[in-house]
Length: 293
Length: 243
Figure 1 (spheres, one colour):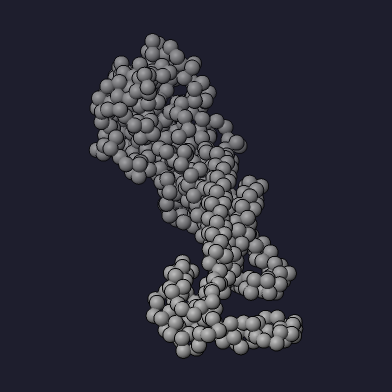
Figure 2: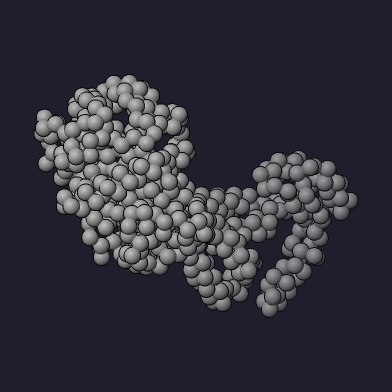
């Protein structure tokens, strides 16, 4: 083991140009991968929050429907397993909420003498997919004026999110394959440079794993160095993005970026694992031909 | 010690060995002669399990080589030392390191290496050059280093593939004396060669192969001109290829 590690470090530095070249190639690939990771995680995060904001159904009540009738409806709704929450929203409360949302333009609402808003019932469903069922039920009620719910918006959002996730995964998959090829080519060159030594090792009776050892460690080393570099760069980029857009995004999407600590820690763990696997796979693949017999 | 029973090996339509049966006893000194492409290399490669026999059985020290798993091959090779025509030393390692390397890679303790490697160097008479690099040595000296490397792990068999092919006659004789000395210590020696004078003068067992078959097996044999037809070609051929 110590022999492998010693040899691997020696080779890594002796073949400086080659090692550097593959470290940079893999760093570049991991960098793209990392940025995709940032994108996918943040889009999922935003999508999840928006989904939460929009998975409610608002049922507008006719003026002649009184609170007791509304309470009857709420009881019926609450009995449904699909419904997470249902509560009565009075027209006064609705106006107050609206004024809050208008902020310093709230005086505009005072221009109207009469409150035009109806009483309503707010329903939150557990799963957005169940919204249709709840809506069907609500439509059987007497005394409602209408209802709104943003199922389509949410569904579109979910679709977009899925698409980005799948696209991200596909791109990540291909990038990983490219990394493996890059490492295996580097190792292959190093193996070729030491073919004579390997053939002698085989004649003297070294085991395949013993011969493979140093190259394996070297591949892993290349993978780890690249992982470290790319995590550093991605972290730097993420801090910058947070600096520039962090608060603006918060306002625009009612959701901030995923905290950098969570992001970078996870990214570091993923990249370390990825770097080790890329390096190990690359060197095992490139050694195969030389260890046939 | 080494026993081939009805061994056949073909490469497509080309015959490597055909129905070869032979037995080499422990402590034997055997010359393997024959024209280029006759099957000498196939014979040696089969012993090292570099290639697989199509049929037949090869026993090495009682173990069936043809049935060894890939995992067991290194163990087999540790009991066989090999010397090549072109020495195959590592150019960036000193004489001592070249020999020690053969021990390091099979996990021998550094302490034992420090004891054993100098002994091997002294056995081949090259102790004074221990700190030199291969390119600083003469061809004969390089071959001595190669022999030291081949025997340092005390193999039961030493295979010498045209060990004198690159050496002038005087140096060749020195190497032969060394091989004979190693043989008298109990190591079985199998030498593939074209050197007529050496075969004749040593008067050891000669196994001649031609077209994949053993044509002659004599205890105190000599080299025969009719087996010599392709000497020039094979000599230039460099013996065993790289694994």
